[in-house]
Length: 254
Image (cartoon, rainbow, N blue to C red; front, side):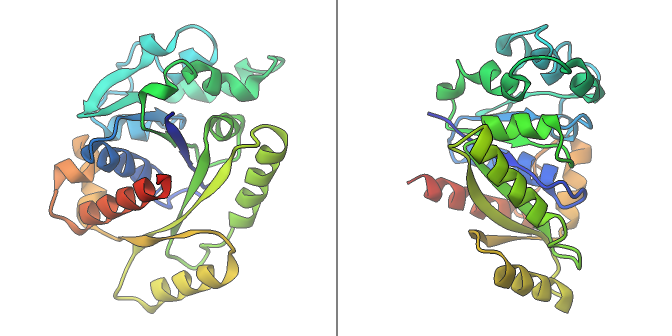
């Protein structure tokens, strides 16, 4: 059965979508069959994989409001072995549309239930908020991976996110686990990045991935070309780091 991992942090600008795109692509590069689900109305995971988010006929929004089935929405082979359920700004209306709907927390889980076994991994890019869209991602997921930027306010909001994960596990999805924390935008030239890593290690009792994602110009450029980093610049430090993260995630399955 496919393992669904929600990439979540209600704090914006922490490398969440970058991690979603590149972890999914590097898992696919390892020969795993991967499904990406773009749950962010900004649609950056969609465009970052080379799909024109405004041109897609059906999106995650249509799945949520019941206007389309999985097969009508999925974009096959955005890159080799990687399919995606695309998103765009329409998704921002979903919360209003769902008022009064029964079991609205489980719509995505139900929407992919029939195909989950066809994938090794399902990577869900969450919006930067603890919204109903994020709750849908967490009820669909087996685990949560949290990117944390190496900056002064790194721990801000993490306790709230961990509390939300506990609440979802208790009330909606008893199988939900905490996959771990991955540090992003690490700058080896600054003491601050080192201090943040040490501070987080001391203050959270959760798994922390050994891989640290560096601050890397090629990582920043890749989305504008609609390519994951392993295809945009395979030899870059960003590509090497996400390959290492993919290997760690695969190892956790064993």
